[in-house]
Amino acid sequence: MLQLPDFPWDSIGEATARARAHPDGLVDLSVGSPVDPTPAVIAEALAAAAGAPGYPTTAGTPELREAIAAWFDRRRGVPGLTAEHAIPTIGSKELIALLPLALGLGPGDVVVHPELAYPTYEVGAAAVGATALPADDPASWPAATRLVWLNSPGNPDGRVLDVPALRAAVARARELGAVIVGDECYAELNWTAPDPTPSILDPAVVGDSRAGVLAVYSLSKQSNLAGYRAGVVAGCRRLVADVLAVRKNLGLMVPLPVQRAMTVALSDDAHVAAQRERYRERRRILADGLRRAGFRIDESGAGLYLWATRGEDSRRTHLRLADLGILTAPGDFYGAKGAHHVRVAFTATDEAIRSAAARLERLA
Image (cartoon, rainbow, N blue to C red; front, top):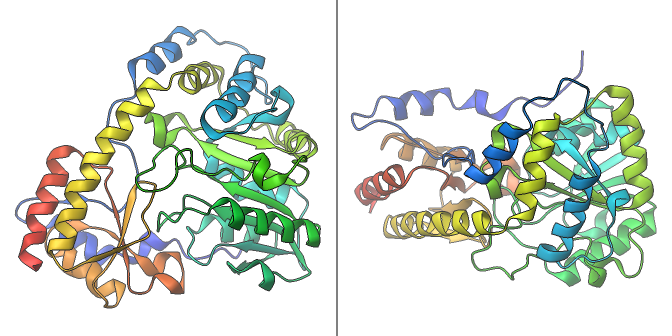
C-alpha cells in the first residue's frame, strides 16, 4: 500500500462540528471552491458539444491547443507557443500528482516544493517513492533533485514570485539537470501583484529556450470550472510530448465537451474580468473585517485566500473562528512555516462574506 501523507481535512472534525453548530449557520471559508455560476458562454459551448459518442484525443483538439498557446501570449506575456507546446489535463491537481510518475522518478530522487505548499506535491513524490523536500532557496536544492515545483501565485499565502526569483530558480534547476514546473493556477486573480502575473515561461525568465520548463494552469478559478476538471500543461515541447505519451497509455483524456468549453473559456477575457471584480469586493470586505478583529494579513497579493495571523498557534485561531461559525484552514496544513496563520478563502457568496465580516467584530 502507498505510504501517503495524512489528508489534512481529516484533522479538523472538531472545528467543523463547532462551526456547523453556530446558531447563525456555517460560513465555510476553508476551501477555494467557486460558488458563482459557470459563465453562460462556456456552459452553452459544453451543451452544444454534448453529442460526443467517440473517444476524445488525449492530446486535445487542435483548436484547444491553439487557444492555450494564444492565451499564454495574450494574458501571460509568453509568445511563441504552438499546439505542440501544450495539452489539456483533467484539472491541474491530477497532473501535479502524476507528473513524478510520468517523468520516471523513483526512490533516491528528490522532488523540491515550496516550504508553504498544499499537499499534492508531496503526494506525487510519495506515490513513486521519491523524497519530497520543502525548500524555497535554490541554493539549498541537492544534487539528487529531479523535479522542482514553484507555486506562484502561492497557495496558501498568495505570494507572487517576481522575474528575478523565477529566473534564479530556473537557472539552478538547469544546473542540476532537473525539470522545473510553475504551478500558476491563480495567475488571473491579481490584487496587488503585477499584471500579468509573471510566468515561468516568460522569455525574461527562460531566455531563448523553454527546455526543461513547464507551466501548469487551471480554469477552475478564473472561469468557475472546478466541476469541469479543466487544466493545461504547457512549455518544453519534449516534456509535453513525454507527458502526453504516458497519458495516452494511462487513458487520461479530457472529455470532448469539456475541451470545447475550455476553448471558449480561454478565448473570452470578459467573463474573467467580471469574476475578478466579484472576488475583489469580497476580498476587501473580508480583509477589512479581519484587520478590525486584530489580524495581520501577510503576502496575499494574488489568489483566492487571505493569509492571516493573530500571532498565535494556527489551531487556536482556527477554533476561535469556528466558535463564530467561520470555518478556515489552519496554516499548519501547508507546512511548519504556517503554524501561526490561517488561510481564509473568499470563495463564498456575497451574503456569506458579509456575515463572516460581521461575526469577526466579536473578536475585535
